[in-house]
Length: 180
Image (cartoon, one colour):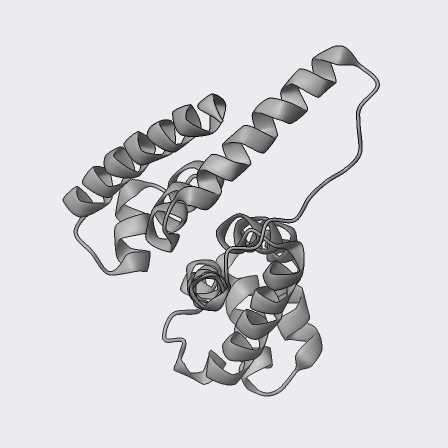
């Protein structure tokens, strides 16, 4: 979810313009981040529609809170924080509903991959929202431990132990799903 801009000065210019009310500048700031934001939100909420709602909520929150951004160069991480928080709020208030995909692939290898993917998805659904969050930040977004710690406002050692524990719980949930 990084903003792809050519220079920090361009980033500052866009942030300054957005703070002044320029919606096009704000759009230029967030547009490169939207696909990754939707992907992360979908993983966290386990729903495409809830992910879209969470990203929309994050966009509104970021727009309204832009004046509070102290360092323009921190915009990508700051916006990511809005997305993660909105997705987590959605995930915590959403009941466990699993969306079914009924497409059957013609290739037998694709079918095996689809079954493994579905099993992993069901195992991931068994995790609590905090485990889904830490695994999404670490594996999907590829954040460094220090960046994850800063985003979650926890020590780096806690990030490491939570990732390790969440992976263990995911393995156990996957094994349980395979036995079903």
